[in-house]
Length: 292
Image 1 (cartoon, helix red, strand yellow):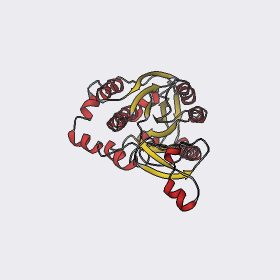
Image 2 (cartoon, rainbow, N blue to C red):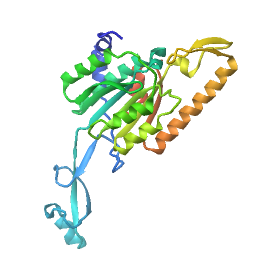
Image 3 (cartoon, rainbow, N blue to C red):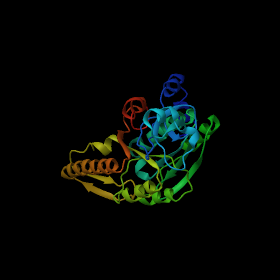
Image 4 (cartoon, rainbow, N blue to C red):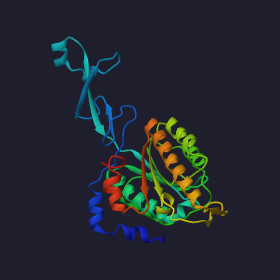
């Protein structure tokens, strides 16, 4: 991707206006509440949220004395306020992402996500990884920061082999504010990713995974024996039609297991084809996953 491609992709004013209708979806893990990121703290705003029972040490200024007069029990008024969050977009730049336009698709999706998050006054950072975290843009807010993110995304190139767990564990050790981590990757690592994801969950980050696969990943167009080259280790392989059938079964089992792991650990997950038009992915497939 050249340095002007991404900005040209988002130069269409109609697309910008449509993106402005999207809002980032974040869920507070402590309260499990869907919707724009909200923090509930007694007395922090004038917008009433709910009552809860008084606990010793609560500020008496927020006791609902009218409710006390009716029920003869102490309840505290709880308010909520919207609060900006830190959003970290983590992009797989391993060699396998060069297949079928997956990296280009991921960078376009990352650009759209950054725009939506920044317009809602959130802080956005971007990281690239393969075997490890390679580079990144620190989380900042503001319109100028979006241009820095675009410049970073336009310079990404596929490098090295994948090591999902090692890279995610490294990410978990960075001094990041607790926030939403969006992982854009084909997730094709024979060693898996669960170990690295658990490290991020321990740090109480919220995680969303968008698995991006090429059309050839999902349905290899091979109907007879062929010789292929592994994109990550440059090893030539002989592949038969029966091997392709086994590959389809293993890929299905792998994605099903990944989705099950994500569901068990309250990680949002979506599988996308890189052949899927970006607008349809943004406004249809990722509703309820990344956007509201």
